[in-house]
Image (cartoon, rainbow, N blue to C red; front, side, top):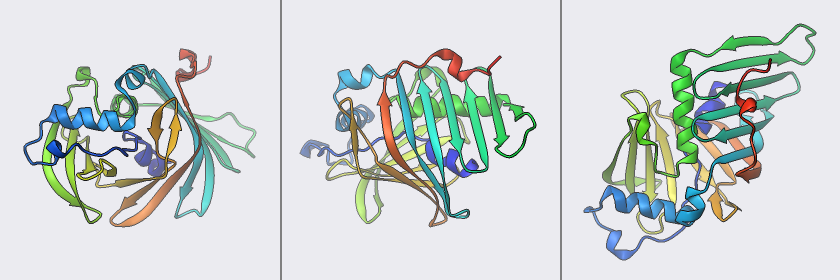
Length: 244
């Protein structure tokens, strides 16, 4: 499950618009870059109205050569629930932003599910990844975020802008945005895992990738193919706490 969590712990978004010519320069402000990135995903009104996103899809893990069904529920401000199902096991990871748990149930096992309560550090990570998925390049200042434009670079053979978002020393994301067309070339996290997006799904006027691939040390370790995405579905807060 850890490999999948790596691939969902970053902002999921596809940039497709073109940079205005006056932005193709080293002298670029953080405000300009964030504004462009948000516009490439959808207009400001649509993005600001997003309160929840639900992802349905299939997870592929290269070391197991099997697919798992997944549903990821995200709701502002910090709520997250991930469900995965395979032939052998069903797993749930959930947090309301303050408390959280992990539950595993083996299909052929008649015993009660294995239940683990999440430590504080894990809950903090989930708060961050929830915001990263819902903020569209504009994270909440309440999480003590440090965000900056890190200049030009080269990614996948193309010149790009580098946008860095830090949540402390051990949690950060670097996004590589194509200087010519604004496409998000890759996202890299603090563990060195690189996520690349493919295809496009437009939901409620907002652009999302159709699939993701995660690479570590140049080798693919996992992938997700989305089958359905819902924006602003009515998610009850009880979905993110342990069932009584």
